[in-house]
Image: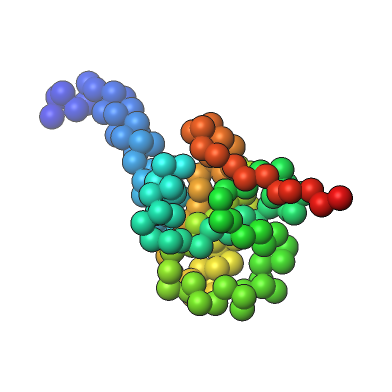
Length: 141
């Protein structure tokens, strides 16, 4: 007991550090929305034929996007829910520039009863940092 009294600050620091390390993992699925690294996203896309929704604006999408991604800007997501209704029980990977818009989109889809939602953590920037390829839209003349 004397040990605990003398080292209460160190014990508190150790517990706080442990919680800080576990927090992202605990938060990851707390909302039922998984956050994936670029590598995990590639595996999911290849193994499960996941729908990839890029919720950036069309001009951002045209500058470079994941192969097979479908562009549905966040502002239009609710209006276009019916167009990907068949994916309600299938894996859906949400992508944006850094991850925040994709997480907002995941919340919208979760409310619409989509069950397998995944956000590309770090978005297209993380994808590029992992040296994964982007597809650029062809400009029509």
